[in-house]
Length: 332
Image (cartoon, rainbow, N blue to C red; front, side):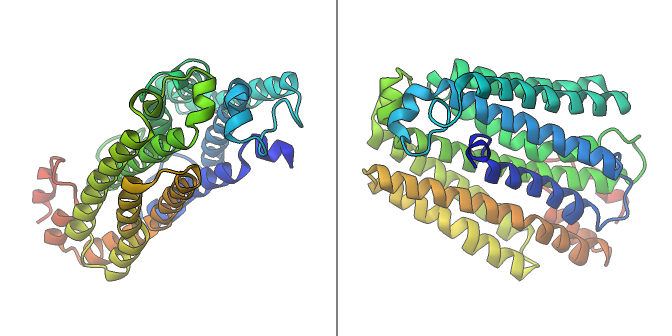
């Protein structure tokens, strides 16, 4: 049990579930050519999961001082697991993840893709070792790795295929997943800032220069509140503009993502206790889970409302307007 806590087993399950949902709930309903076989996809998920587990381990190893104050009852390194053994596990998990990533990139003859795995592992180490102490830099890096865990599936499944085969549909699906990864980045960034406010006492002892330590807890919470409102506005605009044809999807996103984000924004403006920030951080995690669960519904909306009926006008509406959609004009 202590080892499962060390690698944040529930979080790893969420990563695995997210990538499986994108693969089997978003891509599979369409008759498009995908790059990876089932075995190749297993390699992709394994590489991502092991690198993430290594990142959690090294974070606990380096954060021992802060964690004595921030989470005294949930510590593992130095309490139930020896630091040397934890460090050995970090190297083992990270090298296994990078090894699977290297194998996958080699099989696809795309060596640059290996940098996604190696770069993520290096970034997680730098975050725990150095960047965690720098205002906002660590928050952005962690949120970026969450977005990469989502975006990496279409990167491997869609981009390596020669252009021309289902190219229009692939570009549309890729664009939607990238939009989802941007939303995940913003929500996780808010959560990272909230967690910094929650952990301000331990971070101060560890001499981290986080946003709450520099600006104060109340100002930082209000910055997170404004960021929540901005994210809420963007997701609302996207939902009601591009997904309005499917009421179930709109309802789930409204009650599971948009409305809770509004609640978080209002509560952050008033929160001043550690327990309140802990609760808001948990709500933000639930919002992320609801967004992940809604991914197949977005795929269903696209398939039923547009592609099966060849409704090109609706397809225009579903496509991100910031992307060049001139290729759709040839379909009309």
